[in-house]
Image 1 (cartoon, helix red, strand yellow):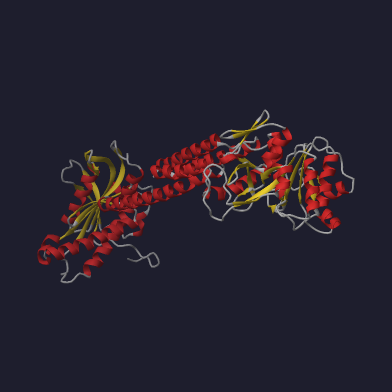
Image 2 (cartoon, helix red, strand yellow):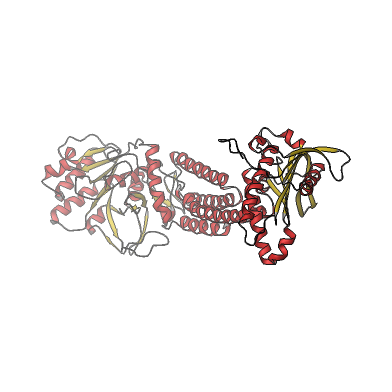
Length: 606
């Protein structure tokens, strides 16, 4: 997974550093718009002014395009107002009346001017390695080219049509041609243009550039954020002074000319996009996004993708995923802060490089954990087959349980089927196995209802304990109730067995309450939980007393004294006697039941 994350992030980072479009750009566009909106509008420089051929101008002139004599008059008015430089964002590719064209060329010659041309790109054509390469261009007429400098006015927009860059250099059949904004800024500064790998210098201060000499655009705000004057005012002789300004003439009239959607305005005239680029080149108030920044983007994305996958794989998902989310949010916050400072780091690349590997790693981790959970469940299920359920639950939640032996009070119940050996000879091996399985199931179900644990099955007998793990009260009372229930249910079950003879089989039980020792026995690699002590021996001997006295249930006085009223639900004992117990020097009081039954409390009879 780590190698896959490195490969994915590395591939995206390589495309990003090379400036090639990928899925990252689809995510970067809205995140860039968000950062532009969050940082808010900015004051545009005063040295760039737009003279707009707006709706008022079109209405006054009787339509668009303007007659070239009127356009010449507009340029003369701009020059007369004191403008230092003129940038005409209007294509002059078709000839008109020769006199009108001559007048326009003469007007252009009165002020340092740059006029627009446009490159035509084939849809889906190859991407140039150095600079944009149009298949053809719309070039101004020679008389206009002689009167003014020419620059290509193409804009680089994203998939949604929002302008993101202004190309400053193009590869054309005419050779390398500068962009319209660059020609205008250099002409205004009266300075040589020095292009390096990641910046352009016009005069003194270098301006950072993106790959292939693209100027990242940082809009000042909605349309008309750059000072805008109606061309009609200048034509009417009412225009303000433009001393020392760079004037960009372009079309803003509704439905005329090109327009773009920006984060601040859904309809921004193309002339304002060009004016924004010119203002950034002159003032340096743009965005820094060069090869070093793109490489930092790629390195950060690679680091986040790798560390995120490792966090998800090595830490619990409840810890790893929040840490990854915090890291991505920190990166996004940092990208916003840097953007406000004029540094355009990618906010999308870390997300696109990190989220898919994290999602895959999380899915793989969940599959692994589910597989582990199934394994653990199978292990616990297998454990419960060899250990009582309550004990298996305790061991599963507390693996260190009983590392040291524990002494505590408990009720121990022994039971045995008398006459089973003779009966098994008649049943045969297979039927004996079925018989014992039914009997063991009956014992486990009955004991479980009284919250006890069957510690051992010994053929047709069992050892049951109460009060060593569970938190239920009155272990002696529950043990006694379980013994009575076992006597009842076993008698009914035996009566249903085929080929059963009266008195052929019978259950014998012995119960005692006292101190026992809980411990782990065996090697470190193979252990079992044992319950030992004199209480266990005495309970076993009481079962022998029941057999010898032809009773069903033998209960010590200690067990009866430890009960909390549970014995009241059963018939009283048939006899209580002092009994000598094999292996004990002292006699004890023992209660014997020949036919223990639960009483019907509604009638008070058994």
